[in-house]
Image 1: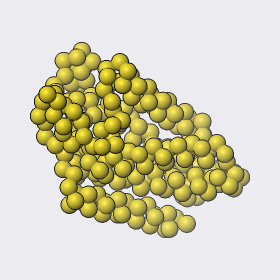
Image 2: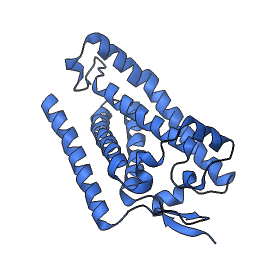
Image 3: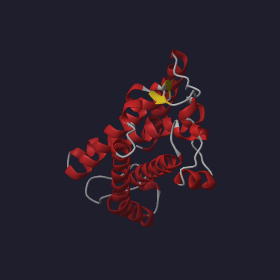
Image 4: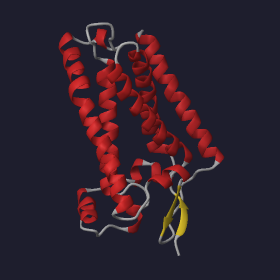
Length: 221
């Protein structure tokens, strides 16, 4: 008899879907160019705020949202590939899923950082571009426009492919838990904390994250 367990707290779910919207918006505005670049920059600041929130929430958030719940050793990853993983390693992010999450967060942070130092030499320049050398600006711009963008697209497509693989091959819906927060598990597992107090803490963390990013943008303007 499957057991319903709250795995993803509301802040983590909201972060996930906000990230989806933000990535889609950044890709779209980058392709449109022109006046859409104003939105591109604003979405970049939103992305940085979201990433800052996730890094903090990864330390203090719900049980399965914390980084400690999905940091795996190479041996654990190898056991998962060999289908010898422990039940608790498939509740939240499994070993391969964890690699995808960390890779995506790292690439997103690198993409945002390079964007802050980029300059298209026409009308758009990141707020950090005037504080670094021309060599750094040139390399950051090249990475942001010609390398990082395609790495991010590749990871995004890989993430979507993994979702469909689990849905059709393993008959496991990974989207529903990220909407409802609950997963059907074959045995009891600890639930994540997702009460009003936890959500208020998350709101405070997010407000502080937004304030930090906006403060930095203001100082650099």
